[in-house]
Length: 277
Image 1 (cartoon, rainbow, N blue to C red):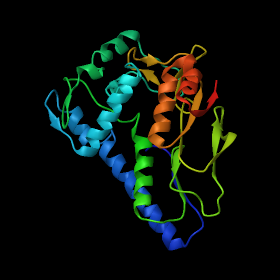
Image 2 (image 1 turned 45 degrees about the vertical axis):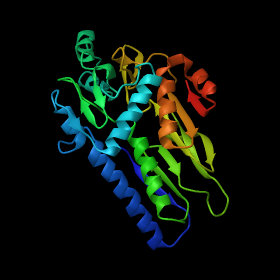
Image 3 (image 1 turned 60 degrees about the vertical axis):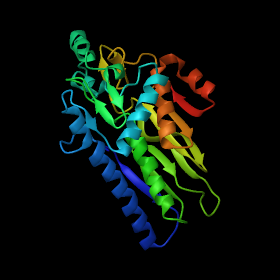
């Protein structure tokens, strides 16, 4: 996941805690290995190397593709599973290099869900196009791990945290909430606000760790797939509380893509959220 991952477990026997850790870590590694765009031996590589050929995908992959297609529709194309090719132009490492507009324009010729042929379970991309689950994968992994722990039956309450996107499995036995911190944009590791969580999940979209600084302007890593350029006017950080991590992450991302209208968008959704301008 390219981020710190942890499992917090309510007071229990060490053997139980170790078993839960094994279940969660095995789930996270499985999803990393299956959906990482950096591997050459998984379904994502097979799709991206298909060069126009139709690829049959399994049920889990199909469900993620369908989810991404829904987000594309809801965002009016600002979110797009095929926008991963834009990383050839953009490197959000805190440096100052931005790509030439012509480079971005050339890559945009290979971006656009409308260019994809998707008739479940068959997927076909035009030559040069790629698919990238990075915008939904981490939150999906959190939810998958939560489901696997719940499937074990009655267990101590757990909190699964993959790089700041987190969810809990159940109420704590002592009735107290889990408490998560909304990290300060400019002070990593410092909580701007504490959020008690009795159920559900928390996810954040922001540029505190992935950004560029060019001629005094900060460029977020969140790209608008319609333009190929970072979204303008969005809050530095958006944290959302929702029933699942996928829902929380999607709302945070869609809000970021609304730019300066992020807060109003989340209010209309009835979401509980925290913004840092």
